[in-house]
Length: 465
Image (tube, rainbow, N blue to C red):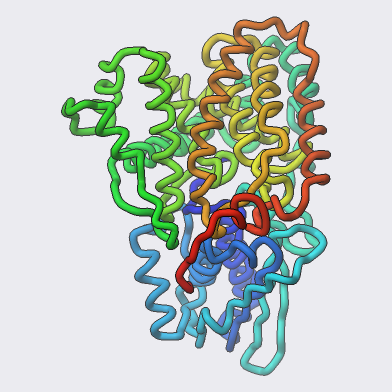
């Protein structure tokens, strides 16, 4: 559920980036890469309608070049894309140069959509001998990609000790084994890699989250894209630290703690953490999909709240938090969707809030059932949330929604910790079913198309890209 990548969108940036790379790798495997004369990319549905604002065209070009979104220097993005535009040439996988003009060879087909998923893109290739090839990919949310007529690789052939598709399955294994949610998840993860490797990977994910929060809290300016949105996290950080000095992340955490535990002070910091991440995301910064880029700020903000105000700055606690959160996200993905183009913003902010709520509840000493209850509470109060980004950019209302999702997650955790799950009227599985039904009933206007809601009621004039 957690992928390291580049903003601003997991489905519109990271997914197309990966699809382009996968396509080129297939050409290379078939010994066709050096025979390519030209490539055309067709973007459909939501990718076409909001692709400019989400940087889909940029992502596809970097993917064709073979760049790795986990390690690519984000400071080079503008330079590399401008070089392609100026030279009208692109080097496939960094090995084979072709003539390529993004203004002519990337088509935004805003009036066309493919039936399987709104986020579709096709690659059309002409080889030196005149033969043509075509492949279509779907970016299904959270950075996951499926090729047309080929199901995404699954773990179906692996026999997990604790197979989980629903929340009821998770509770079954927790009750049968007496283990916490995070312990059950770790036992499943060991099937693929050692416990040490899993922990190392989770701490790497946390490092990216941590670096993103810290950078976002210390970067001023205006977000790209033409809306002229002013970054707020740095100013809020400066106000809250009140002139206290620090030189690195650890000293910064100590400085935050010195401010005390006033309710308003804590809320301001949670908002600051979430703003910081999503301002970085909107600036093509490095973030972790959690479970998506548009909702990337919720889990880091709640985890950072736990670290700063609940004495959770311990590696084993951070690992526990991320393991628990990932399982809740996985259950939502299996039972509904984590794609805003399929389910609206309830599939992004709602799911991330549920993930964070469950993780925080377990880390604060809640039972397995209280953790699942927290996830249900968090999602219940995001049902029906639409995705209507102004200008197709992951900025308004997306950035502030991460602050709301984080606060709701903390509230849901506190409610669950003070409640008895025996008396709960709504189960997590029931709310997931409801979310999916709501998603299917929701008008396409509110599914990341910028065709309805705020996107059409806020007058703006964006520059031509």
